[in-house]
Image (cartoon, rainbow, N blue to C red; front, top):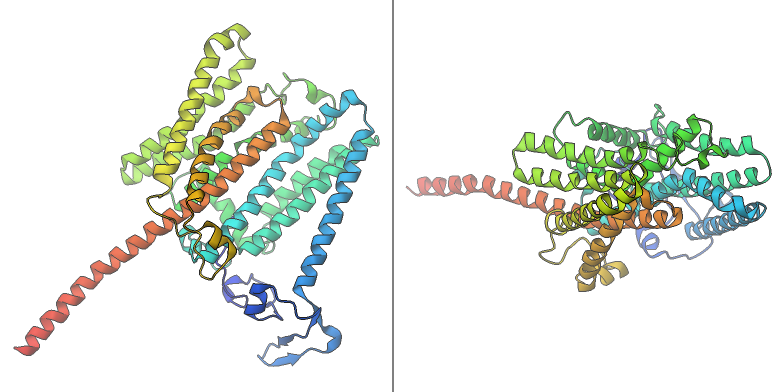
Length: 472
């Protein structure tokens, strides 16, 4: 989740333990502008004593641009195959089972698809930070082995390949009668994801995985002072409440052996859409964040943290009032609980929007987050443009309101609509990250400047007294 500073390629800060030095065959100007002067480039490598070893023509490496195009071609071919196989498999089913089966298949795989989307967008955030000179490693207190945006994108690429492939295999096997093999696909995928995350050996970006898991632990159990990384990740988790809710339902069906069976169709079953576990899981990220605010008030005594805690508490009635629809009489829901749910949704959306614009962000002037260190098309399009601020404020307001739709369990029957809204909320959080990180970066810079000014005053006074004494 967290990445690193875009330092030079041969910097020791980017090397993982046990990794080999990276050999580049293009200079900085060629890499930056994507210049391709030929399909093959001679390269040189250094031996263990620091000497340069010339590489023969037989060992020439292909151009990075050519490799990138080849990878894109393979990705397109893979996507076409998955779509073709999946479509043909779905068309083999009867019309009455097709929609219900897709609903189940989507339930198992959409959480990881949304997580992959978040990883992709986080990599874009890191790229913008590195181009704009924002030292986010200092902001998040990252170590020397943190990930760069390229490594984040590499992880996202593998997630984007593995999850749809597993989903396609699930659909294909089920449609061809191999139900037991089909049921094993989501189980194996989830087990592999957990194993990669908790693998205790120094591979697969061990230090970054440890940092991520440690931060999750600090979010669940805030037994120490809350750092910026702690509440930053907790805020992101609130935008992924839908992911955790679907993960709970998926794991529940795996545990009760309901994968690829008709038992999951029962809405009132232990893992059905009316389960009381759904609102409980949905509310957990907000309770974690609320608990952090209370811990911050205990440590700092700032009353602003209590107002922030109140903001997260407004999500609780939205979630539980919606869930009551399945546990009260229809007339009671329509006449009493539904108006309360609508009112709580308006309060939550309005309060959250106000806090985003006036507290989390600093829009008093044009932001510098899009001002790159070197000329770039994106910097020209985004930096100092008024439409960026109108878009961010307007889209944040609209998406804050639609997010209430996702938090409401009784509106989740249309899985495609809910998936689309959940993806939009992740995009809203992606926009929020730019201005929230820059606001923190500006605060850190102002503190460092003020501290520097305070330290300079005694020095100036001492020099003045010294000159007077010398003159006397």
